[in-house]
Image 1 (cartoon, rainbow, N blue to C red):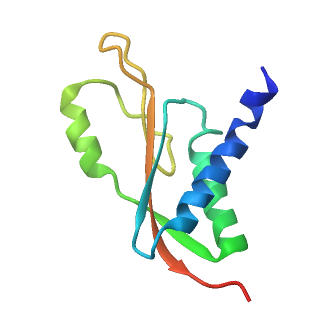
Image 2 (image 1 turned 135 degrees about the vertical axis):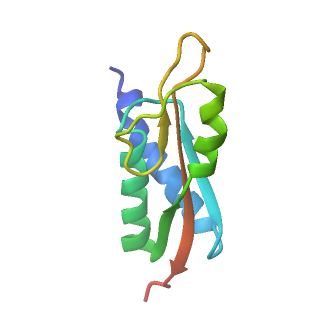
Length: 115
């Protein structure tokens, strides 16, 4: 595996942190990948949320994506993984030529300026 691919989750964390920092309180950002890798999905969201809070005072939480799941389910484009902790993960479906897709919606809930 190339070094660029190994470093990808770190880059994704930095990008997500910058997106979270740029939000107003109450604003949302959607983080999405076409990866099945937990290191590029839930781990990126978890690491970005922890770093954003500890280093920048930015707090956020995941928003429910149940409405998205309800809209996607009848299409039978793919099945939803049960093990995603922070977002939803649609597993690949060769018959419909769709997937994989990970989606997590984060909302900024507070900001504390660093002293």
